[in-house]
Image (cartoon, rainbow, N blue to C red):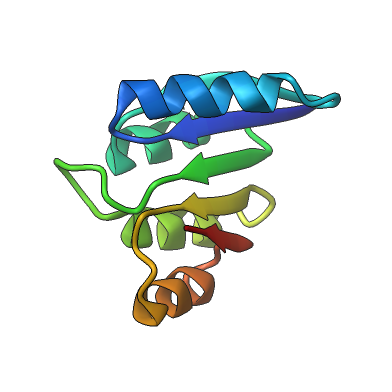
Length: 104
């Protein structure tokens, strides 16, 4: 069973993504966070295999920085970026910082 963390500053988005992920065999959302800082702190506690994360989660650090921090310290955690930003610069930076995929 893959343990998933959903990180987005909008509660309705977190709820929707969590619902969809929990419908998939072998995947379970074990927690949700609303900021980059909270996301990193939750991953530090352990038992997260995959994080589905927005790039824009004010206040605090951007998802790009959070992605890099997670990838550097927890390289086994797979990072999926789910964002409204379709600019190639965001995609390139997210992938460079350690994201496995980028969905917009």
